[in-house]
Image (cartoon, rainbow, N blue to C red; front, side):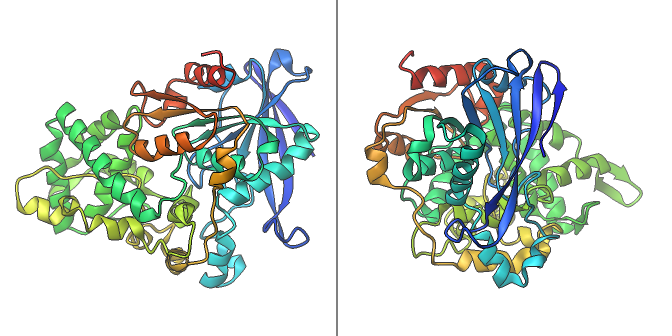
Length: 433
């Protein structure tokens, strides 16, 4: 059953689908997918081409827009838009600490989660496309991890695409997770240096907070154990357009005086737990490194292992000297499954996923080299989350792909730049720019 309703300037329709858990076993277990159809109010009865949006992540449902926010207004000038909650996210069949025990023990849970990578998401898109468009191809817009899915789409089912747009999400076609993180830590360090150059007062503030956490056990109101390493992971915000400013405002209000001495304020703790908790998107932590698994090598907690090659990120060593504390970025570590109550029951499941050696390739270099689908990609010059060199190498490997390399935006450019970013990329797919 579909239900339609209105917001300012748009008509929304809830769409529900049933797809195989394993597309190689179409008669087997099924899961539910949810997507929200959006069309401009004055075009609600028109025949329009379709654009499907693949959210970044992994593990996040599609944006919940009100009206024509961000890039959506530009898209609605010519498309019906389908905002897909990728499998396991949003209003689709969930995968979290509450539901995964229905699968059985950790081994069964890990087996289940192998079906939540880009290849399965693309096969979902192809399954529902026939129902949504009657079989006609559509345009895909992939943000961040959604871009990884888009490159898989070009590899596996290009016949389903009229055009493809990628924003901040061209993956390496062959890098192991170790290569990804070995490139990531220097980028993160540059972002931290830029933050401290903008807000030099934050150097001492960050050191003071980390020193407090090394000396005290702090448990946030939601049960999250806030360690120095966990505090450092707040650096994930530095990859966004407003992230440096957001981190600054967080740090300036960290402490209050109490009868027992200085303590981390309730306000600070409340905001920190919202930033660190994976309760709303546990798949991000569970399958994040698996999105780089493409061969017989285990990911084996890659970000944690590679971090050891960059001792400047060690909080205790930093505080023993007088240097600035380095924050970390988009990295997942085993200690997160000890600190976060939303992840604790899934620690063994995560360990089993990290140990798997049966990952299959996600991209087809030969097919990409022969690509005929119009493709455009925004590559952000010093993207903290996706390595620029890796992205440009992939851009060269996909026949006909046109890039817009810019330092005007951070990784969230399609949100911050809104209509202008999408307009530029659509023009590139049409040879109009």
